[in-house]
Image 1 (tube, each protein chain N blue to C red):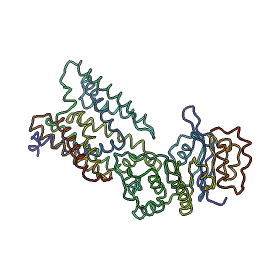
Image 2 (image 1 turned 180 degrees about the vertical axis):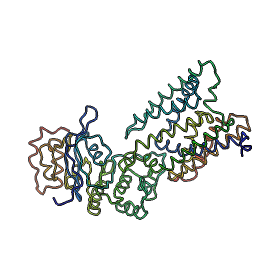
Image 3 (image 1 turned 135 degrees about the vertical axis):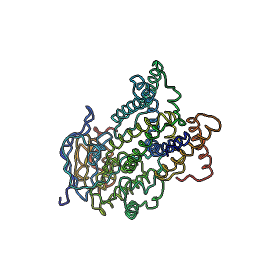
Length: 269
Length: 249
């Protein structure tokens, strides 16, 4: 088993598969609740986390986790029952986090982190430790999702109905934010901030076209995510493209293809 | 009144910051009765329904509730994101699973059985309202709370909606509390009217509320018309014109 995991390609495929399978349900929830922009915000702010980690000599992942947790917890305090997050607030946090992060990383003397690695990660350099972290996170998130799935879906449809019928909307919302934060923090090293945001939104959008139920949309999202991953890794090997960006482009190509094909087939709505 | 008391609200007040939304409002809801909350925009109607169904809990005053009471709720606006695929059937089972038979019965009761397998995004506003109305009848509620049930529904749909609500009351033998802006329909279809403008201006049977000076001051000519058209057997309108100085539109 360990010998097998020595193969870097296999490691990256396993890591990628786990990540697309957990990005699918969480991405769907984000899209349903109009939170697509939140992943971007957390991703950009995570750059500041990396900077802080370097400054205080923590592992970057802890810095990222601290920053994204701080953001989601404070955001959850300003959201009330009727209002989704304000786009403007998210944009301000996003740009500020990115700018502060870039300056921190730039001025620090022991400059071992490249901005490119932060943005796009390095899927083909997954270590066994990374793999373990991703496995534990994916498992934890899946368990939480399954336990609270009905509540998550109900809150996505109508916070008011959910609240009136006994669902603790604020708690569910906070739990969701925390899950998104954990996902971003753990997957960042491998996926990069841009890839995470893309994988939460693009396969989900393709899946929407083919779905008539929330669960079906999750499954299709995972399938699209997997196909994008395979396409991206293929592109990376075949043409020597960077793995991250080529995964994003293959996800977008699949979305366009799906939209084109469904022009001839009646939409299931 | 022999009917079973479900809710007794005692001096309920609620404010957001410095702004007083509800000022010492008291009322009672009985099983088998339809209670309408009327009042101008910003009168606190939605706040009141929100407090009754538990959406708002930081009010002052107290509410006695019948123990073990079940509430069905229709919010004023439900906007399902178009990116979310969800069927009518599923909407009825949003917070708990419901037997297929019950789903069918609820949809049939609101006369929308044919919408069962449709996607929610493909419904018109009126159809969505009917589906959500059907939702409120699931699980034998003791009280159904409707916040502007006819907002966004056309005139014929509106009449139909009130008919359905009356039927629910008879068949489910529950209490119904609804916020409404349609004076005509409210006056001819309810048992109790709460006329609200931050404070409770007046309350009681539609006939007595419609004579109340505060009610007439709030609604002016519109109020007089609603009575003339729907409940008065007379062939003339009472001397409301004498109160016209209160009328502002």
